Length: 336
Image 1: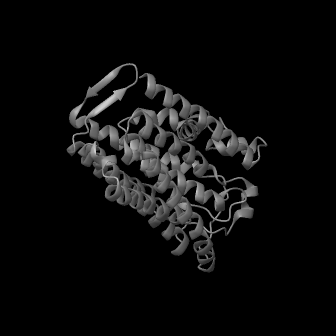
Image 2 (image 1 turned 90 degrees about the vertical axis):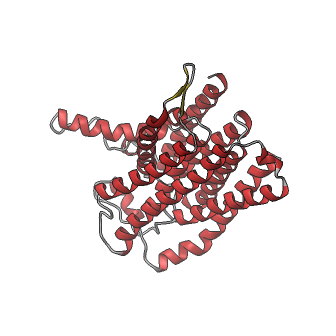
Image 3 (image 1 turned 120 degrees about the vertical axis):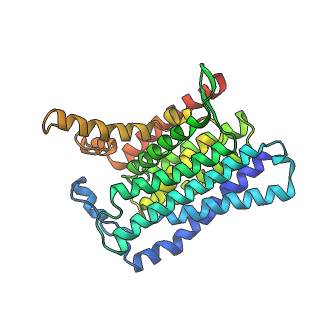
């Protein structure tokens, strides 16, 4: 029955997201909620100026609806699917939904200030980080109070670290939330990578950990990303904006913590890690060498663009890398 659960979540999220594009994109265009392309980016991205942004609203609605529809249907029709789950599993699910919604709300506020209020930088970096840390702290405390204090390291063991789980959760959530945001720089990149990541955690939750709640969560995120790709793949008709990328950042973290394996964020989210590392290395190298650059442009996807790769080729390469990282995560789960 769990297979039907994930199918309902995925199909509902996919259809709602895909169909909503027919209505939301023209609406965003009428409101002139267009993307502003910064001068510091590749010059050929200027042709994307004015493409509707804040399209992440599409898959936010689709994913949340998919989760609710699947959980409600199977809680009523096939109660036994959830009968073996602990209170902690259910807390992880709804705490994850909260984290996604809160992260998306922060992104929406940032986009709103940039696009509607014409405040070029949107939220100040300090303001955005404060709100992200606040959402991460609420997520961390909720999991801790539900008894989630175990930190697992493959081939090493499980460690009950008590209240110290809270700062670890906060750091990982804030870090990966921003990492997914950095990855959203090419048509279809963040949604493609997150689609593969979500499929992996859907399979891990359903097959390895027998966790119906997180299997539903992963399926819904995958369905929403796929529905959005119909509109976001090159050449994109809409961008997700910070509204969507921060929501997906929350989802990426919620899936890993939802199965009690936050360490898998690193191999499965290898592209997010590389994108963030490229920015950090670029800044450090620039300062150390007094003006020289390690990469032609950061984040990493722009370096490949500047090296002559097309957007589609970069997205394909990063998806392949994600597949390798997710395969490694799956193997670690089975062997660790």
